[in-house]
Each structure stands twice: as structure tokens, then as C-alpha cells.
Amino acid sequence: MATHLLIDSPLLKNIYRDVLALLAGWLFTLAFAPYHYVYLAPVALVILFASWQNTSLWRAVLRGYLFGLSSFGLGVSWVYISIHDFGGADALSSAAMTVLFVLFWSLFPALAAFLSISLGAHKHPSLTAFTWVLVEYFRGVILLNGFPWLLGAYSQLTTPLAGYIPIVGAYGTSFFLALSAILVVRFLQKPPLRKSSVILLLLIWLVGGVLQQITWTHPSGAPFRVSLVQGNITQDQKWRPENRLNTLLLYKKLTEAHWDSQVIIWPETAIPAFLDDVDEFFLIPLQQSALAHSTDLVVSLPMTGKNPQEIYNGVITLGKERDIYRKNHLLPFGEYMPWQPVSGFILKQLNIRLGDFTPGGQHQALLKAAGYPFITSICYEDAFGDANISGLPDAAYLVNVTNDGWFGDSLEPHQHLQIAAMRALETGRYLLRATNTGATAVIAPNGKILSQAPLFETTVLTEMITPMSGMTPYAHIGDQPVIVIIVMLLFIGLAWRRWTRRWLSS
Image (cartoon, rainbow, N blue to C red):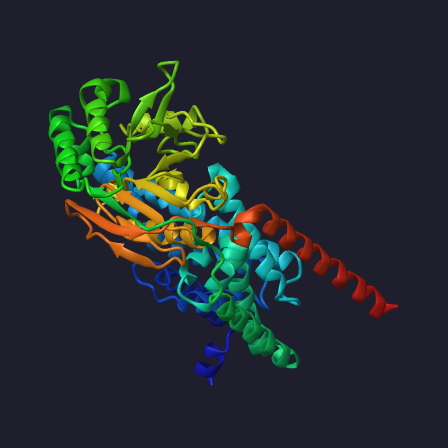
């Protein structure tokens, strides 16, 4: 009798559901690269959203926070490697900063729980899908220049929900993922709504599967050969002055073996020196060689502006045309310091030296290689869908140069590659991704990885790609209209609920 009462006690039931929310966070992260258990994402959200039902507001908030702790605790564990192994901080400080990082971003699933329950999701679960995506957008785009890591849609590149990506992008697809989970919760907890829940759930996934068969863009020219150079120079060696000449000679040698390619791309800051320091003796002769072989080089290096205090993370084309792209969307706490002077003071005390770059500006002309303009993104910029459609429809393909060497042999290079694949699918363009240590890859317009270089190997990845033209629906509208529609639907739903409540009570 006592055992039965203990098992049925509200306290133990609450603890059990708290643990389930914690477990759901781990399951959610396992849906992403490199694990790719993609259907664990909707399962995890079903568990989380169900745990918010029939409980108090603050218990739901706690469960959202527990979900965030386990999801980000596993999913961004690479932060420790960046701070400790390559940032120069001691183990204790690195662990403390990683924990603070996880604690902060875990607030957002908790915020989604707070908004959902406050708006009445315990009676109308479908409201949760709206609040979930709006919080994802706030985290991924607005706050601190955006941290769009572990967005639900990235886990769904190989499921029928991927059919929505060229239409509504990452956030719209995350909405369909969250809505799918809520429909399962409705099926389990609201028997009168089971039939409609099943019909709508099947409709979402069947339509997504049909949409996957549509090709939104088309070839605009003959295929051409591209080579992506992966120098594999570890971050702790990259910027040492004594290694600079060997680095330049390595990239030159790897390039000269592939003069039969129309485009050769080097990774982010492949040249560990400022443009003015290497232009005359290295880049100008390299450009002359490229011209002689009818090849266009795309290389990356830091550069200064008219004011010496202006430092840019840049990409320069060498060949038929010589033009420059300067990185615009900078990484907070990596390339610029928000919350100054507090953040700068803390990092100084920890002896962590980070960059202080200048954004290049939003309206920059497209670079051109192999006779076609392309959209350039540097590292973290490929995590933002809107930033990768601004050059369409003119751009024939996408180029991303990245240095994920900061994160060693961790989850981050795999997660970052998965994010890049989303950009290819959203735009219907090939994406060429050259990285320092991996993951260097060529991604097809359907988001599939055509070829990938092994991580932590010095190699050159060569592939044939086709210039593309045409526009996906997402390329026409971007993220903001999708978010506006979601907000409008949320307010319509709330107004309808309020009106029906008054009508029934009258």
C-alpha cells in the first residue's frame, strides 16, 4: 500500500517528467550531425511538449530549461575546446565559461515554455508550435547578432519535411516540425481531436514528401571543374610567424597541381598575413599564374581599410577579375566584443585574445569566378539564410570559406557542414565549402553532399558543378515574411479562442 502511494505521489510523477524533459534534450541533439538520428527530433519535442501539459507554469519552465541544459550541454560542448585548446584559457576558466554559455542558451527553451503556457497552450497545445519557432528566431537572428545553432529544421534535411525548406526556409520548416510534435501530443492527450490530429499530421508529411520532388532552379551554363584546398594547418600553428612562409608554399604547391580547374578555393584566412604584407611578392605573381592557366583563385586573408584600425576578414578573387568581399556578419565574442567594456575586461583577465574586426557592410558587389557571380560567406555567415539570398538571382553558386580548426575533433565541424547544406537547399544552388581542417565539401542544390574531404588531412577536393539560375520561393521572400505570417496566425488563433469563449459564455 505504501509502495503504491509512493509511486502515485505527485512529487515522484513530477520528478519523473522532469527527467524525461532532460532526456528529451539529449535525444534532440542526437538528431543532428554527426549522429543523424533524424526522427529523434520530433520524438524529443513530443516528450518536451507533453511535459508542459497539465502542470504549473513554472514546472513547465523548469522542464524547458532542463531540455536546454542537456541539448546545449551536448550540442555545443565544442566551446570548451575553442576556449581551452586554442583560446589560451586554463581548464577551470574554460569549463566555467562553457557552463555559462550553456546556462545562457538553455534559457530559450524555458522562454518558449513560459510563453506557451502563459498564452494558454495547456488548453490549446497548437499554440506551442508558434511560440517555439518565434523563440528560435529571436535566438537565431536577433539576440547578440544571432546564434542559430541546433535549430530543429537542420536535423530534417533528409526527411519529408525538407520539401518545405526551399519554400519557407529553416524557421518555417521548424514550425512544421514543432507542429508535427504538437499534433502527436494532441492525439495522445485529447481523444476527441485524434482523428483531425492524424489527418493533419499525415497531410504535413505527405505534402512535404511531394514538395521534395520539385526542382525549383535550373542549369544556366555548362558544368565546370572546381578544386577546394584543405591545408590542414592546426589553429595553434597557423599564426606563428615562423610558419608563414611554409604555409604560403603549401597552398601554392597544392594549387599548382590543379591548374586544370576553372576555380580553386582556399579556406578562411588561409594566408596568415595581412593583404598589404603579401600582395606584391605573393598574390600578384599567383594571379599572373592563374591568368596563364585560365583559372580563377578565391583566397581568404585579413586586410585593413582606409583607417589602419579597420580590420576586415576578407576574400579576394585572383584571375580574370580581382575583387574583394569583406565579412559582414561577425561572430560575437570571436570577431567583435558585445557588452563592452564588461566582456573585454573579463576576457582580458582570462588572458584570452580575440579578434576585433569591422563589418564589411551589407551591400557588396558579388565576386565572380569561372565567368559567373557567386555569393560569398565567411565561416559563421553561412548560418543565416537571409544573408545567403541577397545576391540572387544573379549568383550562379555559393562559396563558403571556413576555419573550423578552432574546434578540433568535435561535433562542431559536422554541425556546421549540416548548416551549410541548408543554404544550398534554400537557394537551389551548388555550395562550395573550403575549410582549413574540415569539413571541406561540395553540396548539391538539393542539399545532398556530393563529395567531402576527410577531416584533418591535407588534401584537395575536386568536383564538377553546374551554374544554376532561377529562384526558390524562399529566395524571393526570406525569413522575415515567414515570421510575420507565423505571428499573424498566432494572434488570429488567440483572437479566435477569445471570441469563441465569449460566444459560448453568452
